[in-house]
Image (cartoon, rainbow, N blue to C red; front, side, top):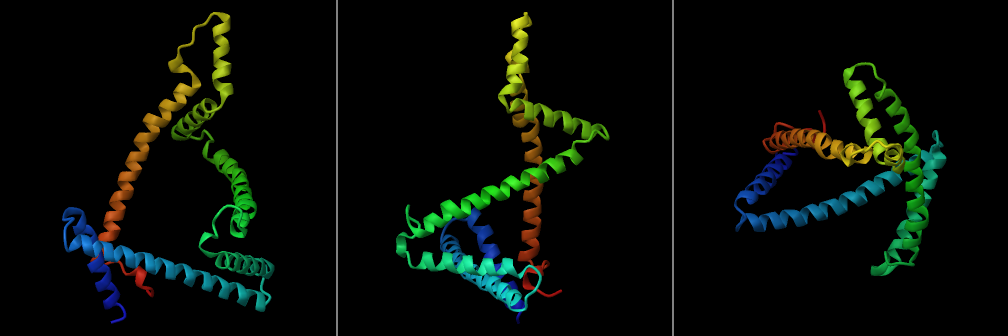
Length: 222
């Protein structure tokens, strides 16, 4: 029964969500509202469960002095400080000027900016490996990337615009910014649509497997 009951609940909820798109009337619309509320409740409980699990793992790492246990200690201290300030701030704890807002604006946002700044080096390394003209596809990717990047900065149009000063008329359609916009809105958009169609088909396939009980990885075990 430990597997049959969750599979039955999953099947019922999945079928109701599918049917309510085609029959948005009672009782399916009401059941959809009920299940949505339960999803929010379960998600809130899952957040606390994840936080407590993080604290347990971090505390165990600090207690046993495992490798890099200092980072775990920082996680525990920062988590407790944030939670205490948030819980003691009342309903308006996220208002401007509160302690929670100060932590968010002056600690969380700078740390996030630093993290994304560090990603620039990984992007540059990946771009070097991906844009090496080893074959036709890689060369095409390299040319498209160059045109898009040069069209996204003012120096691209400025460099091409110098040709107008020596008597060569350059149409707006072949300016780097126009070419970059065309690549993004036509070629890139077409590729994105194909990828999104593939993702949608994959979601439908996986959802049907879960609803029908074929896919059981979410139940744990083998």
